[in-house]
Length: 127
Image (cartoon, rainbow, N blue to C red; front, top):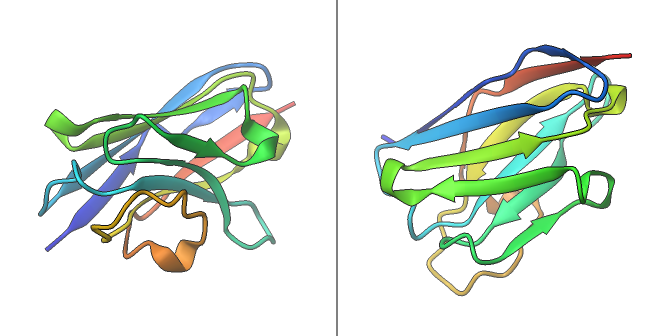
């Protein structure tokens, strides 16, 4: 049984930094693309960042470019989201997701392409 568990979400002030962690169990994540999505109150879930299996290739949604960094530690089956210069509009539930796809990394941003999901971590940024 594959499980993803996020941690690290909390209340922070605007301008502060926060790192979210996601641990994968039940399978190795080393050959899977992994991603972070988020869902703000009253809005649909949206793509935030994705990483190729090795971490060599990464993609970000425009609002977080230059502020957020996705990283992974495959030996520990971990993926991280480092969030700097947080803004109130970053307030959301953040989800990590694993793509069960053995093909070439294709920078996939659609949530439908990701098979396994965590339960989410709440990040609240106050102004």
